[in-house]
Length: 354
Image: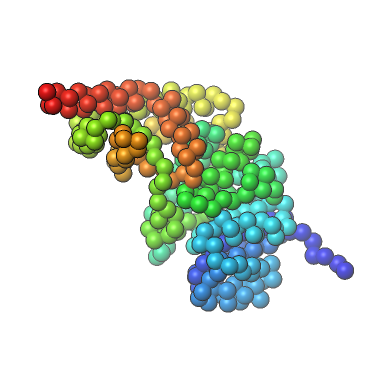
């Protein structure tokens, strides 16, 4: 019996109740300049007519395959199912509400042909009407393992990797938190390195109703810890007042410049191919234009103490500890000011109680 030749790329697309709109995502794959692919669309127990539209797409283009599973309620399960079925030497992800530019796979494979094992491309962010809301900048495509610890650098639809890389890192994990941040970090810990380009080959949907915007924070970055909740509230009010924002921003920028200088000198630092700009200057400029220094601050009670903290949407407590440790090490001036402010709040409270 003859077997169909293995495709170069396996495209993995988890979906749930997307209905006819899934056709736009399918079309962005069928119109790729690279034709050597298979697309595994995993319906996560869809209860509408999504499966029928996928079957329609598969009848039009047999490279598309529908895989139906019982409801997971999380894309990691469907992605793992597709990984087990994937035959391509390269795996590329595409979320069901995103699309690719026609040369996306061509760009991805050009990086793979140069020896890359894990790649990411730039993006455009468009709303439901197709209006451009934001776009990636070249400096945002710089990468380093410490960037990977600190933030969600690349959404799944922008990422591709050699087959087997995800499985060796433990596969996609379910649970609370951003699962792509979790997997890319485990890949990094296993020795993988991102290769990036500034080309904006991915169109992401800008919609506050998507799952990514609904993921709750279960872990935290502590800024200060107090014995008395009144001191914690005083610190919160002080930060929100903006009294010391100029000093905080100056310290943050000085810390960031030193941190980036160290990273850029590290052989693991990655620039997008073909870009020779100054990442430190661009990142500093972005920091200066940030509207808020302290968004989403909360006060948490833990073991009879009170912590002023920022939310983290990472998946594990161990990851949150790594973020906290790295932020404190990379921002010593800023945290010296925060520690001084915390001490001031505690002293003021103690003085008022005499």
